[in-house]
Image (cartoon, rainbow over all chains, first blue to last red; front, side, top):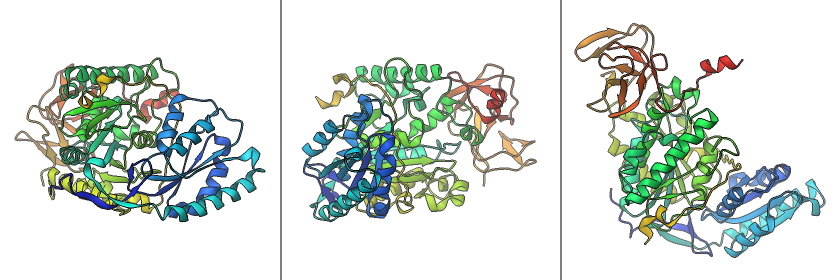
Length: 407
Length: 98
């Protein structure tokens, strides 16, 4: 089962001019305000099956977080080229984003609808650019990529009483295998770790980092208490989960048992292998509402932190995928798997029915990561799922004690 | 196939490993209990008698507290336990807003 990190996980990675290696060769069409969404979608739709993805930001008010998120998403290793679609009068700093993408060496173009003669001509010009750029992207150099160059994120959605018994600990086993080979693994949603703060802090690389992990959970507990709701949906209760901390313990097992190397915030890309906690809850007073309004917003943040692949654990049965990075669906509940098998990649429910062990499913996930890195489509990719959500937030930058293993 | 699992030796709840219709028999520590209602996979059953205020232990850690006395073999859920952190929102509890 051991793939040593010196051996390539794929021979076919896409080498970008900034040195990053991707496992997909996507063109991102990004709208910079909701008013440009329709035009951007019209440009993207005919090319959806050719790996052209739609992302963007709806708000007209500028926001440092969403600007940073789009910078990181547009220069993600899986992204080969970017078309920015602006209405013209929105608050988003389009020129700064354009410059940042240019400096990464990616082909990029900015279309401002108000300067292009309106909807029809903007759509035509955009489609023409995408068509030409798709041909250009075929010549991106293909290179070997090793496990220590791979970043994998994990999220859970539609959890039930089986998630914490089967899918989540299986992902934990896969994470342990990956981290042992120097890959980078990211787990998240501090609001879904309420109740686990002490045991998690004990796994930190240093006591200082342990205190930071603990503080990030206290921040989440306070934030959600102000909002009056935890990260707990009615379907979680139907599935046998009763409390936030019960859901948390199940979610926590996705992190496996490796040492925790650092805490990052959305858009921070770890520069060294290891296990990282992504703190998704904004800093300061409650300002823009719920930290992440749905699973897709969490996935977008994991991708902005560099995730090439997302491991998505579900018990009730989520069907979402994502723009930019493939989502591997690990189904916790054998009844859900039978009901929604076309949307699932791994049946961790077999553990409950006594057919497979946690280690076996963990190894299956690990092997699937290698095949997906080599180009195999996941269920959600082949079904055309490309969900994307980005909202408003505010963060303070992380300090050096958040990643003590860098020194 | 056994219909429940004890996730950690210190737990005071068992977890159903399959959905069971009302009237099903389950075995809890040598005694047999009959389920009064049907229960889905993943739901919890008391492994021993619990008093009001006792911590509910699953995965070997507290996941909330009993809000009433709970008999061995009884279903444990929103009606007899609560979070020690945040209230749990369900569509039933949302009815109070309408």
